[in-house]
Image (cartoon, rainbow, N blue to C red; front, side):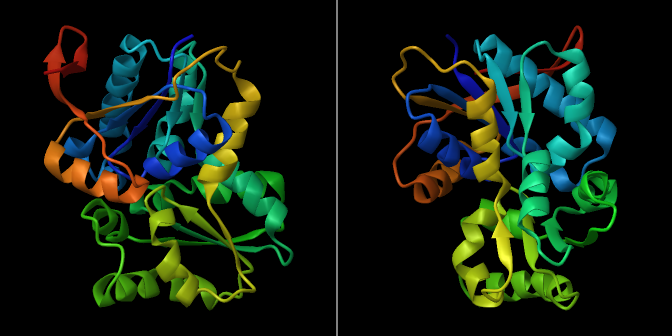
Length: 269
């Protein structure tokens, strides 16, 4: 059986990978970090579709039997159409996070921290209202946090201030549940715990996503638990930050985007 593929704009999807490795340790994985186009959160839907579809095509050429869009922006803007175009099982992180938040809230007031594109899409609002029209959703665009994590900036006064500016407005709305609507944000949990009161439950969609993948795919009969990494941008920076985040050294391979006969393509150098 083939590996499970993951795609993201950078290191954020590693939060999903580490949860998958906890529940499916015997699986092999292929992780594609599209750092060349990072950040996804400022790109148009049409542009993002071209990027994500070409990334999915690449993962399919790597024999992946399932693909996880380990990015909330891609999950919100591209996943619905992608499911119409691919027969391979595709998973996102947005709906698992929505379901977990709806189950967790007691007062029906939910905050969402996400990229600008995810907030503008209203994807979290629509999905939560579909579960319960009485839920009140307070979204906050956090334009700089993903880039900070991408640079390995996980602590310090600058990051703390940026996180405070994102969290404070939603806390003022009396929420009891906070969704980390970008897969980069779980890496800021230590700082976040200093800003969010214990009465507010923080939802990391990566945890529920891993459980949903586990529930919907046939497990590998045998696998080495290996992970291959591919990077479309600068390898050294990704390798340095990713090694720090997952706690073990990695050896990513370089890929490049180019134009083929049918549009944007990804190829290993």
